Image 1 (cartoon, helix red, strand yellow):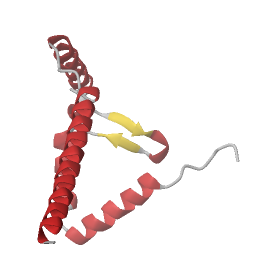
Image 2 (cartoon, helix red, strand yellow):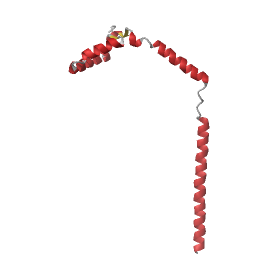
Image 3 (cartoon, helix red, strand yellow):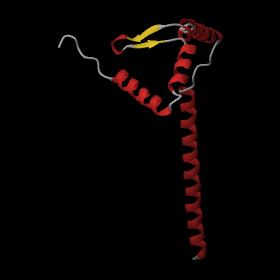
Image 4 (cartoon, helix red, strand yellow):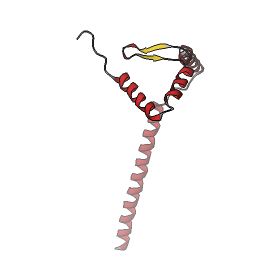
Length: 120
């Protein structure tokens, strides 16, 4: 009777091993298919040149932003000033930290306040 149980255990073990191996093969096949379908194209020389040109265009458009005056948001009276001027103003304003924080909060509230509709 022991021989029958050992034979039965052997067939269960074989079925279990075949099931695990079959599952691993199915998963490996799905991974291969997924890798083939989702493979990103490589960056070619043409694409690299296009990106470099776009980067240089953006830098050229923004090159004078730190060194010039401009209107950022007219309804909220927000203007851009040259960086050295802004640094001097910030140093002068933050000599008294409490006044600097109060001024910063006031400017933030002014900048984020909704604009009134002139047609109402």
